[in-house]
Length: 510
Image: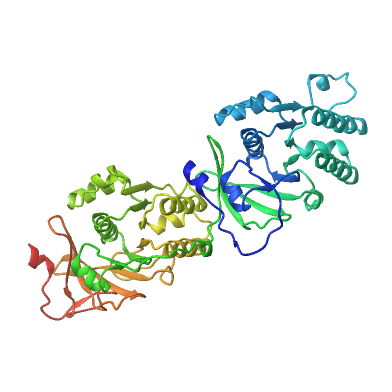
């Protein structure tokens, strides 16, 4: 994931003119990507978010990035002490050596006999606070400054007019000293208060969303950034050891590449014939059917065939455990071990309760852009749906992901489980219009035996067979596709009627 963050690049419209301005990195690769290279130097920015969204981590990461490139940093705190800040840094494996930490409130301020207390703001306290900031900045002469937090300044100011004037005064002071400043705010202002938004050169909003089940989700949005073209909308991010990791929202139109329209075999000649010679590169195939019908086994066979011809593949497991998948594949004579050892195949065990859609999209980008994988499987979309707040957003996400994979020349298999076994079956969502090919599986009964039927009901890239065939999974022969079931009616409905002598695979292979 570190490589992913370091290599995510901003594919912005290069032919559009931009104002020349010197940039500085925020220390967060994904955010720099969103901003097209970082923020403008020597400006004042607002970073707002409720407690727990990661503002302090953001600020420390910003200062440490400056330290890494030779820029001095100053952390001015009214809400946390130096010990707490060092504890936050230690949790990420950082050292704050080299940074200046300035606590505006010391032990003397907590003395009840001391006239000026942070608990009883007054005009004198605000003036002295501002003077202390000015004195320390003049002493340290930092290139980067974190001011944490504005809620304390707001309490000291007592009224909006005086608060705005003090922030403006600080803005001009920092500008004269050529400082790049991030002011942190915990959104304790009255609802609708946009004073700071108009003053700041840029505004970044951090949010934390609590789920009914699973970990909380965090996302950010660049509300405003003067003179910089940025990627709008919400972008997921996580806080973990090492700091803040931002996953830029995937915009498929920014990622277009050239590739040959090759056709790859599924590894089952009869299935290739059904599909119109096989799977074309740069297309997505939806495997749809009830649970246990053979969708995942078919996907495994297709992946193995791609690996055997030298491709690199990524398999994203949402439902089944990786060990179970390997045991099943081995039992059917499809052993992946050598491909896992040499890195040709990578299995990703995804927990949708813990991973956000943005992080999942970023994982796919890493596999394609850094690991050169040309074959992917998402198994299954039903579990992926649980990671989204609603079906509408899943469709939008999948549209961008599938368009991106298509434009990168990646062959994609999507597994979608349907409700019901025999008779009427239905899906939680309709992805048929997003898929280039749809391979549909159904159960049906023959002489007391549960059999499976397979058919291709759509293909945008090939002239496919429109017949229905028996489908069988065999430990000896892996996958089998039989003759067209011309003597059956009602196979797709799951309630077939047998009218003839079509040979069944069970008789042919047993």
